[in-house]
Structure formats: C-alpha cells, structure tokens
Length: 236
Image (cartoon, rainbow, N blue to C red; front, top):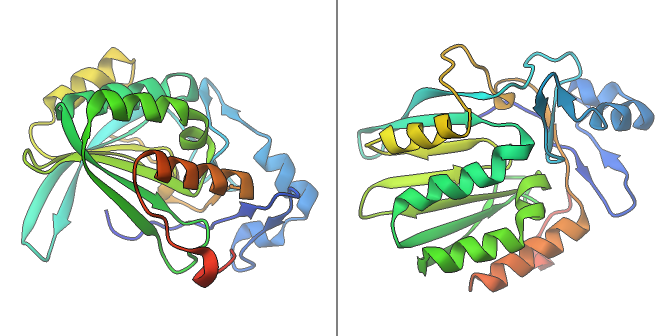
C-alpha cells in the first residue's frame, strides 16, 4: 500500500504519552491528548484502544470496505486487495472468519513496532493448524484489538492469499479470488463503500504500553516464534 502518513504515540506504564512535536499532537497538553484518546466512538463506529484519528478529524472513522491494488514492483505484480474497517464489537470475529477461508494449515507473521522507531520487526511461523491458531488468537484477543503496536498476518503461500489485521486495526485481504472475503464482510454488515477513507490516510495516533509488549512476547512464545532481544531496541 506504500507509506502511510501518521504519527505514533506510545503510552508507558505510567500512562504518560510521548508525541512527535512536528505533528498536531505535539502541540497538545497531556490533558488535551488524554481527552482525545478517551473519545472511543464516532457515531455508530466504535474504535478499539489501539488508534485514534487526528485532532481535526481529517478522517472520521466509519465501517465499510473498498477494493484496492498492491503493486509489487520487484516482481512486477499487481495483487487485488480488499481493505476494511469495522466497529469494535464485530471486528475480531470478522478477522477470525476471514482467516478461516485460507485453509487448514497456514503461515503466520506477527509484527511489532514497540521498540523499533525505524520500522517494524516481523516474527514468522510456518505451518500451523488453523484450529490451533484460532484458539491461540482468541486467548490474545485483547492484545490484538487494543495494542497500537501489534499487527498480524495469516497467509497461505500456496494460494497466494493473505489476511492482515494491522496495527491500525484495519483488515486487509490480498490475492484472488476476493469473493469469499467479500461475502464474509457483508455477512458481518460491512458493506462496499467506494468513497471510504481509512484512518491511515491522515494523521493519527497509536497507543501501547509495557504491559502490551509483554503480552506480545507471550503470544510469540505461544506460537513458537522468537522475538528480537530488547538489548538493541530503541525506546519510543
């Protein structure tokens, strides 16, 4: 999808927030920022704790999906994509149903930006049974929904299909055919909206905590992954 504009704010265990002074969030007092973070719904759309839109609401979050295209310049490929936003109360079950279309054995990628200000760290696990994966993900539902520095992708390389639940809590499905993904979205009352804009398309803010990072490490261990040592990590 290319670079996505935005600012990242991460809370520490004391509930303090550090912001990029070059963004509009940098001009806010701590009280003003915390007041903005407490706004959890816009109309009928309820946000998770992971991310908030810009102060001036350049994008007002709403439910829906649209078609897009991922261009893989290295391999000269154009991959069809569905991008979707769903309200909190249906979001996780929607993701679980979406990955259920990928087959009985899949690969999993966990992504963290907790201590990686210059990018993301990916942890990979190949060949995991779907029932085992789903059970584990349900155990970590709170982390996956509410941590603004954790993302996950489930893929079937043999089919060339992938479902990503990113750190913005958008669901992104890659690879033909897309019809099965569309049917699941509609069954969860998430409908095609060609004009929808996502929170990634304007300035926005992420939240996380030390507790969330420890939960991320636990999820890595449950899935048989190795996480990068924090010795070389940079604190956000």
